[in-house]
Image (tube, rainbow, N blue to C red; front, side, top):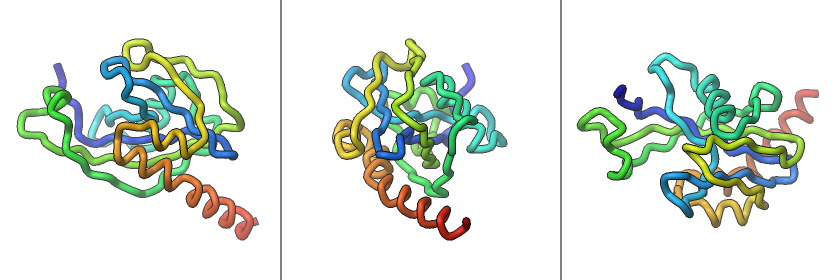
Length: 157
């Protein structure tokens, strides 16, 4: 078995009115999250990882919608229950945050080995439901990110 690389993406999928998609982990019932996943190779671009993971975990083609790299990183300790997936001695992961805006709550096709169900929730409720502190922080930051992007697109046009 090849070890996972401790570099990952977190992709918060949302609508313009801030409905957020959450998916429940198959290996941890009750653990709700946004799309996450590790790079497949050290040189895999983060955007490519984000597009691949969104497709694998939700069936959504992220190339069809605005994908925004927040240029934000979180570093966290790898939970002991998942440490065996990484090379011996690997204790931390670096996560890169993205958002993906879809026009409406789109249908989702889950990877059954990874996730059991999905929900579209208002951003505040989605933040309350997540188990990961970095996912909670990203969802809580989402309204400000959307405002910033809206201002930037108005001033650029």
